[in-house]
Length: 399
Picture (cartoon, rainbow, N blue to C red):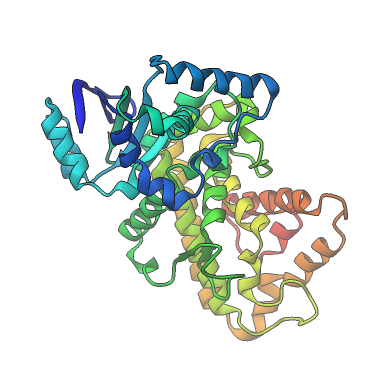
């Protein structure tokens, strides 16, 4: 499989093993075949170059490659178990790497840099199967390390939709989120349910989350912004650099896990303790309805992110970040205890959903989604910082 094993280096910053090899085009395409079949059109992970100059560049690249031109290495990413990761650092021969690649799950191999080159290899495979190309493997035990590396590799290039970019490692990212939630909060195993668009429509119970929504929450948490255009976010270099900076934080991924878990626990507590409609004609009539909406979920995680890391453009010391995350966890757990202790006659006054519904009803009709995100951002900012919990009314009146 491997023609030549060139080197194996450890990136201590992102904790990835970087292994550079040469291999035949046919072997490379065989490696990425399963992920190609699972993800549909591979170049759909990154939009085709549609400009006149972009099309000419790819056409030129194709013609050059047919004539045996050498293209830069394609970078493949793979997340493995901790014990396997330790062994990979010892690889020094092509036989060791070949044996590992033979046994690994090809579905988990992600192309983190080189979509356009891969398209060229696919388009020309009939005549270039025996050509030798360079390929670099980035192998890590943590999904966030791979995502961080991917963002760094693609910064400064043709804008690539950030949501699509994270979806290159979409499956392992979600798997890692799920595993880490269960590790930190085993009580959520069972109630938490992540589902795809093909599996289910609107959610019917608390802690139900569409997988695409988890990705958006992850991005919003990293960017500290409640309004993100997932279609064009990487066209903005500042946004891309903000995400890279966030992911370089020592505990970024674990912080997200804690905040997402707090969202789940609060969602469950409110839903289970307010099952009878307060007013059946309102938009939010039972507890579950609060976090049915994406603006509420985004508002919660972004308010937490800003409390932990500060507003965009500011930096907080790691010790301050740690203190903030502990404060938020304590705050949410105290709120849950309060919710669970409220007796039926006092529920309407505590939740104050009549005020919340009134606020939503009188929201400006243009760009209502953006308004709601900002509304919930301010609501939850107060909820997560104010030490006085008599009712939720002050939160609904914070914006």
